[in-house]
Length: 362
Image 1: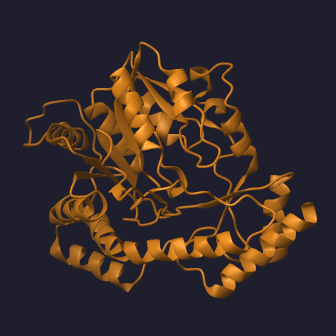
Image 2 (image 1 turned 60 degrees about the vertical axis):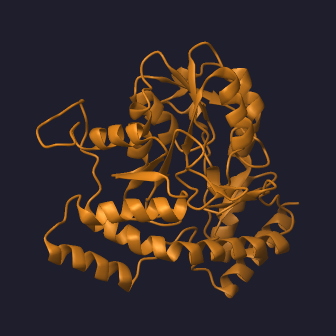
């Protein structure tokens, strides 16, 4: 079986973990500080970074630190993982769902404009599957209406627009370091921000509301990253450029050889890092997935079959809402293996499988 995703953890990560365990400093400490600095320098152009326990935690504390709360509305895509809208709802604010651009699976600026109300405080696009959202158009909208812009960059480590990295456009960016992401710390997240005050508030919220012991300034959480996780992340960060290049090469091979399906498009000027290589298929999508698995031993994933605005947990925020591009994507997409562990033989088999199943269903 060719897996849809494959975390790559090797000897260097084990050595790094052993080093931390031997040091006796296991909780948040010097490894976390080094990881924050290196992540900022290498992935977000020197922007300040704060490590937390997960990507969802990064979104949640970023929103809290930015002052989002009850009475506010934050415009988000519905076609994404639920953590995006969950993080808004957890602050007491209201997630407002907008539609996506069919070609790129990211927030459609026209739909965002139509969703703005007097209660709108922010726009939070998701750089879905590793492709940047249209930050130029969204930034213009934010400026026009006096809104703030945040970034859910959970899947987009190293993605960029005209050389400017995602995570450096908004008031803050949030990255996930879950095992299936393009790099991992085992579990964890990172908040990037150009605001020293917002970074300070994130540090307060992640550590029980205090910078100095027993001097709690706000009601906070325990959302710290351990030095064990940071040590893994630092090693993975060193691997990331090579892994990203391999993902892009794998995607180029699939682009050139797949037939009978709609392959992912890349906006001019955008750097896609292919967290997922997501195609569209006509007809029976679930049957297509089953055929790949059962007949060709090719794994795949469907992200996301139920849009956020129809989830039982979130649908009360959007009664009667219709998002046609979102609904179409939810019914048609399949994410194929694109990870850097794929061999040439794996890629050839994926192409042969997809082309055969597409032809059989035509």
